[in-house]
Length: 599
Image (cartoon, rainbow, N blue to C red; front, side, top):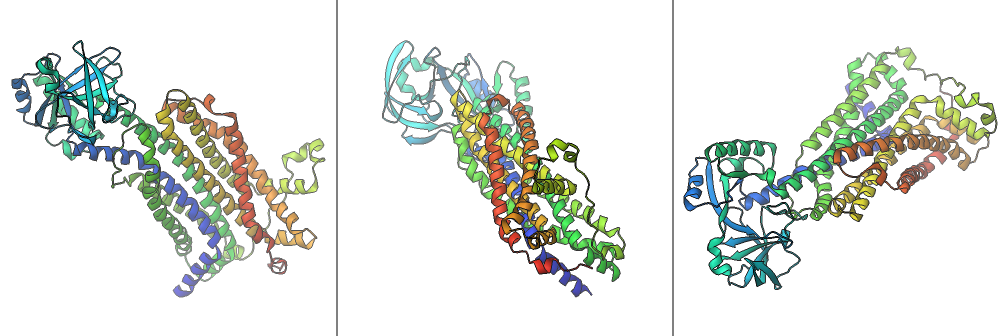
């Protein structure tokens, strides 16, 4: 008995291969999209954390306008939890040519270590090392004219350095809040006697135990805040700066937060559409196997065993899709999108570690939704008597639709359109599933185009950096949404054709040509797709307004008029492509087999 039951499970899988594969691809798309975008922000933060830790970035910076003496630096170093305290002599010229100058010591920095990106360190009085974040357009070998202490100084640029404190492409503000035009590192000999007038105004501090936490994480920030509070009590005359006061760190966290908002909003649509598709697919599958379920009940199989069959099929389909989807999402999408942040930040090499938590959460949600929907569908059938299950369900009675109550409009419609409209509203479940699924996909496509328009508008004004970052994300949303729409329509149309083979065969017997019979089915698909688009675009407008409000930039007014047309046009194109893919199946309906009596 068990072996026979397992054979029926295998037969059910083979008989529903196209349906299950389409569901699997839809789940795969959703998981890949959610896990890929979800890991992007953590991957960026992890990559910077590894880079900054390698440069022994300071946990805090003590600042004194009057300068630090050797004794005061030693006092900071003697604090129990301070592992390093290194002074930095610097000054800012201010004014229009706002230059920050660091004096290089006899030995390299141990904290906030400088990395040579190109060239070499200066070793003569007339040479200077510039920071990549504020190089003023100079390259290695150029001569720079600087005004120091009222004197004009000509220096040769020997190299470009990378500081762990400066990694924003958007520039760096000076102490007066004005943008710096240049950040330079000079040998003390370059200033001659004036070098003694440059005080040590900053002390770089590292704390014991901070390496346990990822840099810029909430745990790290809480740990540093606690240590800084202790230092402020012990040294009230000093000001202590942390990553929260570092302009580059603030920029990094700000853009990661913006990406996180997108990754929290869009997955909801993917999971909702997937749930609807699973509901429709399993409903059709169970309906097609009413007689099989009736046989199971007649042979004495329990409800749990019967339900277990369909739960196992659904779980296997979803689990396979989730495994592939999370693998694609974690390995492919970060690699594609990560380089786009080079427009905003000086990117380190991408971390080999990718954060799987967002993907695992989406997998858990998708599996839970799939199993819950399948259980709901099977339980409805198990409530019927075996004798009822062994007979096909009676066709749903036709009813007048609302258009028939508008005679001047209804009478002007051709018969084929009347027939299509009646069928559309006759099967309300199929109508709702198709319209809602297409509406969700349309909303995502519109949101993708809107992000692209906002990005183009920013690029034309003052936000070119964030624009460059948003463009690949917007394209990703558009591509995934269109693929989602295609698979959803394919799945629903494929099931519709399978369910209505007798109807299609009857049309062919009555003299309908292949193209006319196809039009009979596809006309209904088109009507439902248009309804979904009409709902999806306003839904997308609301989604865009929500995203814009959370990202705190752009406006719905920035969305170009053609975005509405492109959204509708692309969705209809993908619907048409799906119809073309299913045309051979529709034309190959065997009229003799389809019209055999089912009694």
